[in-house]
Image (spheres, rainbow, N blue to C red):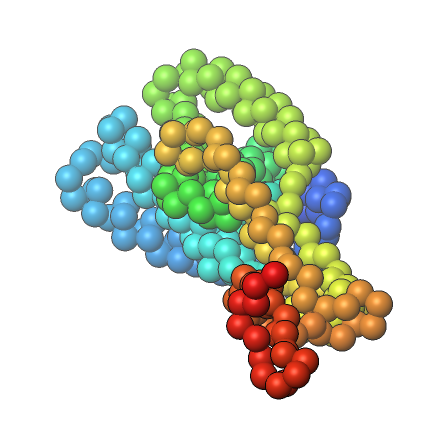
Length: 327
């Protein structure tokens, strides 16, 4: 029972540490449980790939050679384990609505990795010694968490690039979210594998562990403090009197979060000049709220020139009009 506690405790402590580091908005419990359980299941896929990959390498290389150890640790073990965790995180979280802050990616990656590490640790300790349990608690389980910090860092950056419309940055960071953890994990295993041949490798291993652990802790603290929203926050809309918005809004309802406009060219890095919003014309009476109907002006008759008319004079005897009378 004590050995079982020693197998579970390191993962539990690290899970709690990462969960508390997510300060702005906690992730849904059901999502975290699902990621953790699928991380546990990824242990099975990694085991199958390691057996197959190791068998194929054995056909071409001597198993005790340094080249075989390098290929096995980097391209078989590290790649199989980190790829399984990466697939879990990508499939379960990339389009999930809860993935709305940059630090969320670190939380997801750590939960998937520690799910893997928990089952792996139990299997190792079941046939191991108390010393094995202590060493794995101090090195192996935290090692998986450190790999996950790198994965989450680049995974969050990839999501941010997608939101900003930078597809090249998204693809580049998604690749790094797998490549960097594979390199760190592979180096960890490779140095331990060659320690029997080169004793000084143990010094390199412990130096590497100290440096990478300090770096990972500082990285988590920095990412936690600088955690930012991926999308613009929703704001309530109050319709103006007499003005019908394009999208009808129920009182108290908020509009779905809108993607922030990219204010720079992702290829050149040059800032784009913002476009001033176009003002709409008021088409209602502000006093009554009634919509105004535009009134076409009535056509005006042309102005005629005024010509004075001379008065008509009459002959007082005959009553006939007199034309151009002479004075």
